[in-house]
Length: 248
Image 1 (cartoon, rainbow, N blue to C red):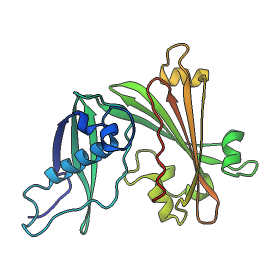
Image 2: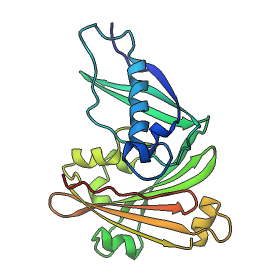
Image 3: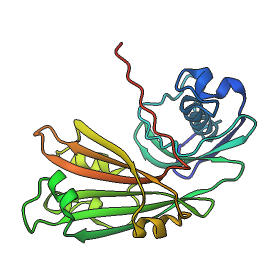
Image 4: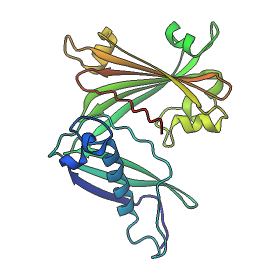
């Protein structure tokens, strides 16, 4: 049976203790673990292909981009909805949204060409007068601002690419950078906490006295040239940042 774009599938889960980060070894908090979120998303893609594959054929996951942005407690109901958006030979590309008890994520994107502030220009190693393309994202959960993510790129590098055009990029900006010959091979992260600026407080609709975490990631290509500066501003009452280092 032919496999065409537009196929959909769903999978649901009521979170138990066995699904938590603490139980799965991916963290030490009793909320839904990221590995379980990924498994649920994959189950939805399998459901989308039900009855579409010959008996001797199956699918395996080869590449995943996953943003797990909100904690989900034990007892909550979670649903994953998969949508097949692209068929490239044997490669199937799905978009999957995972929501908690009807919680709906969304985002507003604007793309601008700007003369970046010194903090950004220095990280991108731009000369005086050089411009940058910025993709500004304001992310929402159930219609409420959740965080911001602004990604800056040297304009001369991305001017003729999807990065400089309005709208979302289904395959992600990092894949576009790879196609331009400037895939990121090294990143440097800076994370700190402070009080928000007035613009940030208004953009995120923060209550008075709410601090934010600032997370800046600079990505470098194989020539050790900075090609992307991503600036996330995260209300401290809604986010947890966790790193896992595995020396195996």
